[in-house]
Length: 175
Image (tube, rainbow, N blue to C red; front, side):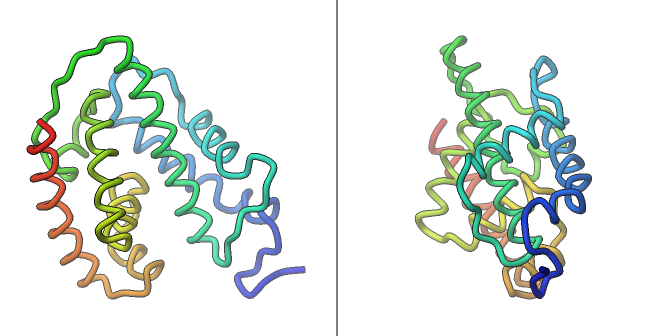
């Protein structure tokens, strides 16, 4: 009862990829504000609940399922940021591109601004938006992203540089 990738169901796949999902969640939460209430385990669980929600999840390869969970982690963090933002109702958007933001904790306004910019990029260039999501939110390497998207690591790097520039300009425009 296994597919080509070796897994027939999410139940069979989850024990294998769960440690990687927790690592990704911990990495994401290190960038969040210090008083953030989510823990890595809770973020992974919330993302899985959002993704599955009693319905079948289409996936062919483990990397595809991981990408789907990463997207839901992004949405969960953005929802938390929006809720926090609603409490504060102040607007201060930094002008750094995602790579510069990765090393520091993100305030909710910046996280929401990045999500809005990434949503706009999805409409313009879905593959590049997926690349940014996998690299920034998922912490995947160029080789891992390239394997998932079916492109070379060098193409990933070129697209990442273009996306960083575009996001930087978009974040400045939002400001």
